[in-house]
Image (cartoon, rainbow, N blue to C red; front, side, top):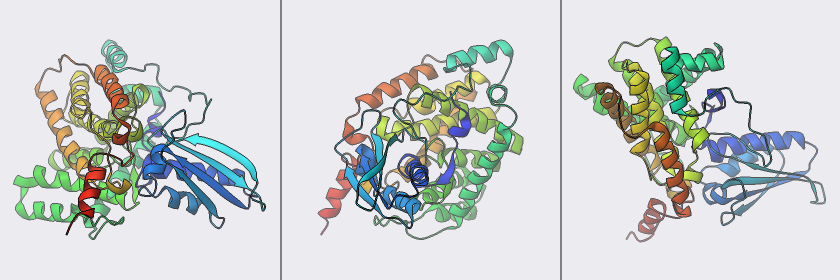
Length: 403
């Protein structure tokens, strides 16, 4: 498995796979071909189907300024390696190709080339069962295991991750207005937060937790600076849970960073053994993974054992199995923003349930990850971030037929 630095990426939304990664790919290709007169970019599969809503073309064009970029959209074609693929061409004054690059965005802001060797593994184990066995025999917690594998420098990076997460919440709960994109979706984080404050501590759980999740998800929808956890579309879940626990239980930064390390380990295992890409396995890979990460982090902050943490993460993913990715108009708004809210609430429930138990359970985390991968592969294409099924077409149909 790679470093959790590759899972927690700091960048601008609204999509890690459809905005952050294409922008980075464009910057790399344009820099290598800075003598080109113009560029041509062909977008395939999910990237072409929902790219406009995710601002893919805008992100790529901004990287090319002042040069022109011609876009070709091929949503009906998936390239061999992954459904989120793109091809870059550098063109001379006569429009002839001088350079070509095919690259993929497998999720979470990462880039992948055909024939590329996997990055050197930072972790000696690649399954939760192996890590549990090792930690049990050595007496290590999950965060100590992360530190042993990543080195003490990981804490400086997680400190920056924590800072950006908290700042995205603070920006989000202060902002008001309508989100861009044409759906007429209004920001609600400020309203939730203010009403919770006015109603007193009895509604902290019911109001502040959703407000925090809304705040980050809404910031992401406007292209704000967020942390992928593990993706942009699911970026509100973990920060909301962390901030909620800080509100309700005295918690030091040191313990928050340790919880982020554990959550990163959980996300890394899902990324390694299955996928965090909505275009590959549906929203279960994004929101389900985020819920598992947040549930594990919460269980640790509640004083849970490593087996209780594993149980919380397992439930967080298990109860999102089969969740489709069907963004209306290709925007990370409906149903994405509300899913962050309910996944954060479910993460807290999973952590509470697990810590009340002794941590024993029938279905393991590894087994649920395997099932999630197979379920994602079995999902019809229209439910894997193409905006061609589910809510994406139902809402569009209803909008057209309104009087």
